Each structure stands twice: as structure tokens, then as C-alpha cells.
Image (cartoon, rainbow, N blue to C red; front, side, top):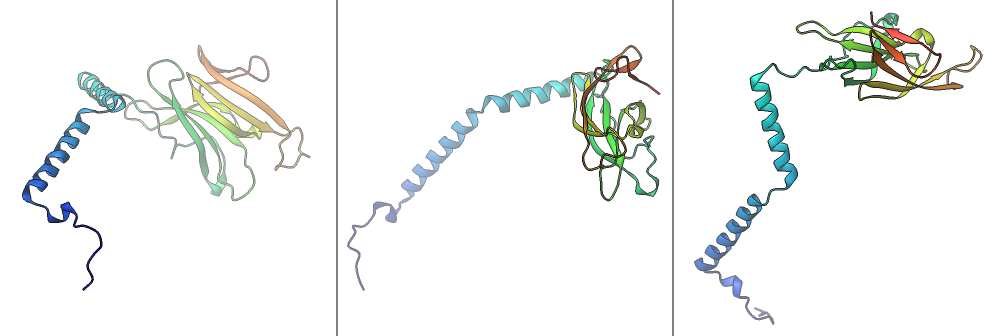
Length: 198
């Protein structure tokens, strides 16, 4: 048997007092970690408590309409429809959220034209389309779509003529829509254009 050239280590011969000291130190570390919570966790907890308290005294907060399964005014035949993008927002300032959806036909290839639709939902009813901001008949592709602060924004790509290949739109417009009175007013493009509610 070969002996080690190193001296015996003290911790290899542990006694119960060593285990007790280790357990006490670990308990102190765990207790200290529990007391030093980050501010974000405390803020999240208090915000959750505030929301729960607010909901107990009144009606639950309204949810934005689900854009999936809605009957859009878009004729796709047997291909069906695809919701490419959607975003919630209170567009008319009534405190209840609407949903804005970018929808196109579910084409196997190519770039089918898109429509932008505003959805609302009354209590207990199915979501429904209340306005068309971009009609697929305009043969536009929607990109850079956002809903922020009651405003819908998008970049619209189109074609100057039927001779332009569908892969390569040659027209580009940045557009925005806001609810004014009884219509969504488009802030770019032809003056005075509006998408009225249906």
C-alpha cells in the first residue's frame, strides 16, 4: 500500500459539531437571501395584489376579441383565411379593447393581398368586424404593423400596374388610422380618405 505524501486533511474526519456549524451557516444564507428580495419582484407582487383588489370590487377587465375564427369579409374560396398579425388596443377611447387583425387568404405560395380589420366584442357575443382599414381588393401587402396609443400604423406595399411582377411591389406607403367621431381617418394617402364602421 502506498501512502499519500500529503498531510491528512482536517475535514476528512468530520465530527457532529462540524455538521451543525455547516447547517447553521446554510440556514443563515437562506434566511438572508429571503430578506433581500429585488425591487422588481416586490413591485410585481404589489401590482398583482392591486389588480386582484380592483377586480374584486367591480367587473372583470375586458379582454380584446380573439381574431381567430372570425368571419372576415374576404373571399378565399376553399383556401381559407390566415390571421397574419393582430394586436389589441383601445381605439375609440371607451375603455374597452378592440383587436386589429391583418388577414389574407391562405395561399400555398406567393403573396396574397392583405386586409386590415378592426374587431369588437360585446359581452357574451362573438367577435365581429366593425371596420375595414385596408380592403384586400386594393391588392396591398401589409408590413410593419403596429397598434399603439389608439393609433393603427402599417406600411402598405403595392403595384403601379398589372405588369409589375407580384414578387416585387414597386409602391410603398406608410399609413396610420385613428378614430375620429364615427370613422377611422387615414393620416397618409389621399386626403380625406376614411374607413367607416360597418
